[in-house]
Amino acid sequence: MEKEQKPDKFKEQKTTVSIVTPFGEGGIGKIVVSGQDALSIVNKVFQGKGIADLREALSHKLYYGHIHHRGQRIDEVVLHIMKQRDSFTGKDEVEVNCHGGIRVLISIYECIESTGAEGAPWTSLLSQSLENNKIDLVQKEALQEIVQAQTKLGVKVLLDQYAGALSAVLRKGLEIIGGIRRSLNKNESYHNGAVHPHLSRKRQLDNQSLNTIPSSHEGRPGGDNRLDENDASVSALTDTINSLLKTASFGMALTAPQVLVILGKPNVGKSTIINAILGEERMLVHHEPGTTRDYVSEFIAVDGVPFELVDTAGMRDTNDMLEAMSIELTQEQLRRADKVLVVFDNSRPFDREDEGILGALNSWLTSKISGDLPQKVNTPSVIPVINKCDLPAKLDKLRIESALYQPICSLSALNKEGFDNLNRRLVQEYDTAYKPMRPLVFNERQYLLLAEADVLLKQAQECLIAKNKPGKTLHVIDKVQGIFTACLKGSQ
Ligand SMILES: Nc1nc2c(ncn2[C@@H]2O[C@H](COP(=O)(O)OP(=O)(O)OP(=O)(O)O)[C@@H](O)[C@H]2O)c(=O)[nH]1
Ligand SMILES: [Mg+2]
Image (cartoon, rainbow, N blue to C red):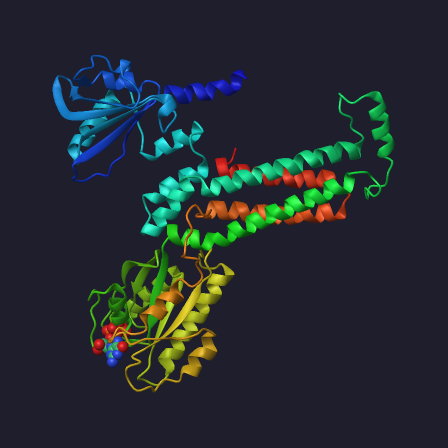
């Protein structure tokens, strides 16, 4: 007991100061002081109107005044006090609302630091909240992701996960696991002849005689029912995990924009396509091949799903040094790609350069699938695009279809036609019609843990079918419990 108390006491003693608003010009900046000495530390530098001693401040009240340091007035501030029981971190908190701007923020931060608080990044407030069980790890991760979300849909989904959508399912899973464990424990002691201390001598003898029954459990009153119930619980848990795992590609697409690289030989209209998608003349377009030399990237959202759209230099064999360097840059971008838009020109026959592009794509797909190139949960995909469909067709589409086995998107980037279909293709694997409070897996940590639990549950199911390994089943279920707990709270 004594051992456990020490680290908690240490945590309580540490009072931190963090700048929580971004550096830059703004009307208001905010600094948060959190810890058991928060009020006394800020009290040393605060001269308030209507309050002489901040330690007597009330929770959830605002206090107007000034921060002073070494006889100098630093800034006019409004403090928001939250006592331990009401605060986000689970510790006493003082929010110092000052004027925005880098200088003011740094001055107040340094002044509070020199008065006894320990400087910490804003994310340390999330860690304190987690340590004090105000939030769980999934909620903490959702908060960390919200600030980086690129789309409104991303914010909406992450706010729901912060509100507990995914955590509730994981907690429900832990309840089911608890039920299976209790039942298996009974089975195990039953199987081993272990006897509950409170059972009467007669019951003990009865139990021992029951243990002579063959391990198939046949003929044991109630025994098979319990196994069937466990089987049903494991199946329910497996279903829950599988439906969560299916949400991962959408959840992770929202938190980590996929790299969408546009590829094709020179002059097929890649930059014109990008400009049409962006709705502005962002990329230089020219009738001469080799216009794009460097790669250029922009963020776009399609139905709320963010993508990093990368324009590249056209790929072809060349002796020109500058062009060769551009092509190397294109290949570098291809290695980062999660999805590729490969563009062909409707007005020109399929040629050796197009063939070369298809070859490069094949190697890319093989490297992605084999794991030689990093790959997110989302499967890598290629969307073939035929551009310049406003011009008479000279391209042999069959060559492309037979190489890529993918339906082709027909575009006229010049006339801005065909883009609805392209957008649909980009997000077709996601259920973008998001229902509020839908649980979603939104990072790799959660995904890998749940995938591991899924494998273990299959083992548990096999043990249950074999009907004679309650000890092993219990061991596997214990591991699954550890994984669910790690998912919610981190490794213990
Ligand atoms: N008719 C027609 N012309 C197009 C279309 N899309 C692009 N073009 C023209 O094709 C030429 C090349 O377009 P770009 O967008 O620069 O082609 P690119 O693939 O980026 O070329 P590089 O950067 O040199 O690799 C320009 O003259 C465009 O106006 C289209 O849909 N129809
Ligand atoms: Mg270009």
